Image 1: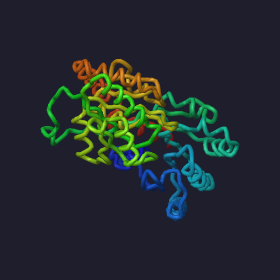
Image 2: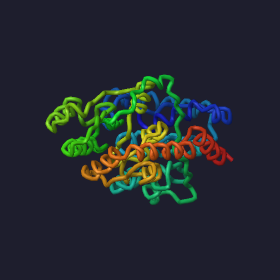
Image 3: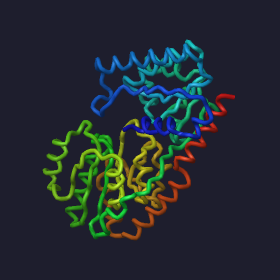
Image 4: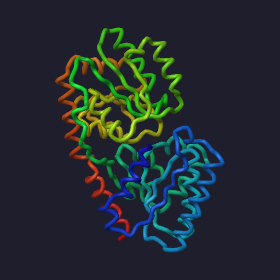
Length: 353
């Protein structure tokens, strides 16, 4: 599930926000699977028509004081949102957009996109999860129209704590995201290949849905690298099984260079489970992972640098534990659901004044 969908559900389920406003919700999501993302289809068009009339009906029935809108910033989803926003403009609805991904700066080069961004953001306010993302919207949004609200997630206490495997000398690496090239899948596999050549003892689990890399392609690449005993694709995991995967891991790795990457929730989930995190200088990640304290940040697409940091954590188990504990403290102080809810509530209350 995408960051925007997860955060949207948390906002919808928030008793704090629900008790403060009379709210109505519309699910804007057209894609139901990873493979549907960014692709047009008759099914998605039919969903769009249903959503459009749902919004129209709600606007006619009761005009809201404020619309909190989770905006897509690129691709077909962005053009869909433009049509929705036209309805809001016709009814003169005050709107605040919550952005969970970047990509505006890259896509604004096209004249049509530049025109649409100007239309979308005119006289509107925006919520960003991190100050690192302001550069992406600075052409269209004045600084005083920006609100910052770091993402937050629920804490999770494992009821099945005793099921997690006992400490061993084998480093257990976890990658949890869709199988996308730009998430660094092949970079991590290459780093694992380097570790194996050095004689390191490790296991690496990949968890997530298939993206532009299929399970067959993944397994073939792993076999080619001679890593079949070390690297496994475990498919999708949800609920307790996903949390158990975090519990059983020693380090979480996300070597992403995804162009729309912002503040990945999987990093917060890893910090929640006291795992050290190895990631990259992408989007808002440097505000989540404190390099050398809660984990390591490496250059993008650099398997050698990634392998070196993994090797450090293999050789220094106490450092792994220390970094994981520091990550847990950072999560508790900055990224809990309660902190997120109260910050978002204060923003929405200010907007409706």
